[in-house]
Image (tube, rainbow over all chains, first blue to last red; front, side, top):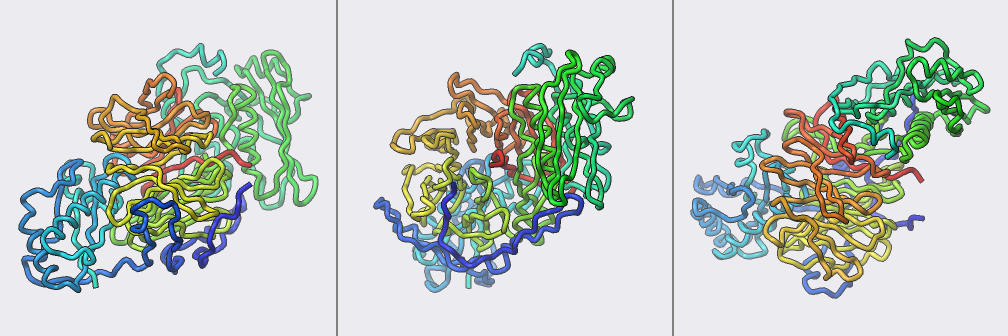
Length: 183
Length: 441
């Protein structure tokens, strides 16, 4: 009943052996880090809605991290947020300005802003909150002269906590956006 | 529910049943073990007599033990200990119903495993009502060495349905995510197991997060989100072979994949470079995208109604996350479904389409709520502080979800009537995001 579904891309996984009940199954899992399919689905969107041009496929390489600027002022790269908020508190104005100045002065330098949340609530909704935080920092940088092409965003939602734990202290240290300099 | 259950006193007592003694000898250690944490007050007493078997040389498979474990783990049955059985008949003709009734059993199940050929194993079961002495039903399943465990689960389904009038879901599978180790050396695994936690198979392993597994309607594929390329991408993987395809790697968020009931489309969440999450529909064979929501709010976590006409989703367009429903054919028609709590997210629809399960916040605790769509009443079924990811069994009778047991993430089950709770404890690491697979086709 299923149609064959997909454009073929290189196989990433090993064949899964069917288990025999009296032996421990030997899983041969697909390994996501061994040459995942390269490239991505690059089909033109045909629905005709505005804004879909922004949905062009991106390459598999999302950018490798670099050390970034070495000055002491620019080592602080994390902005923390209040619960359920993507507002950048005024405490971080100086941090934003410092990075914005550096990026505006070095237009070939790129950053990735990574948005995160604490663990509470639903995971995919938290991806949305994390994205809001990343976008807030991105906009703040652009307002101070950074070129749009220098900034990408990613949201990890609650998937990459900085601190494990189920207390407000841990949660507050996970609600954050990180500015990551790229090569 | 039959009248036996209707007689139950509302308050259930807590019992803890360790089922280790019932596992077949020589069985490989399961990664998940079921513990009943609450059962009905008046479980049905049943005797599962060890099945006669004539089996391959590498050891007999104890069908009766699997059946007994299944039925007891449902919280609705109490099985007679084998040590108390004075007789061990294997055919209805040999069953003295009055003796079993005198020993306190309402039902007796007897059976036989035989090998008519080297590649075929027959598993037969007779279910007897010991009060009347009548044969309730008899059933035969044809299996092979690779599927005899599944045949045992089908026997459990058969008994469950004959007695309770509800289709059993013992012969089904679950998928879930396991996380071991600590950053930066953590290992994520996507695992498919039998619904009782046995027979786990790792189908994907990664050093980066895996999220949001979703079964195709025929159980052949799993869609999921992977961060293996440092940003989110949606993959569809064939469970049996491991073959996988990247179906969405667009700029921004790629999330929350959900197969349509006919399997032809995937609802998914995209944000584009602007970072505004919305729900889209991807036609898998035509490779065409259709936008379903267009709102500056976070719109995500699509879940289809079983008739394929509606999609339920999470949106914070009213301020905080709530559950909404849109009409797939006329997607501007959006209706809010949840009220009451200031946080309702991550909907999943019951197989009969009448209920929606979701994460709801009570005070500061995040719990699993179920709303009856006709009456709009909500029952909160779980009691943890950080419960998430509810998924209905394909018979609609229970919900599996992720909870926390102190420091460790665990999988838990609760029956939709709230009377039975179970915890599946993992031997290693954290487990999260369970999804219950469909009935076998």
